[in-house]
Image (cartoon, rainbow, N blue to C red; front, side):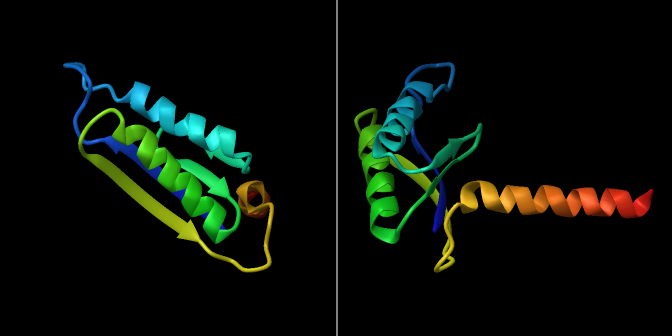
Length: 106
């Protein structure tokens, strides 16, 4: 399964509104997990089995909770039994489809 999630404290640490220190703590949990992952400006996506993915999400939430009394979590999952390597596989198929459409338009 793929799990895309965003976790941050509900209250910023300072007047700039930045939550980067808390988010860095969450990403450290993801990296330490050993699961395949990708982090972008909005979400971190991890790939694994139910129990291991949800354990990583919980660990990330716990890490962020150290920065404030309230945590916001947004989570989306793609559950597809029997498939692995989808963190990159889905993107590879998308790029191939885009290339095919562009070639058809030429």
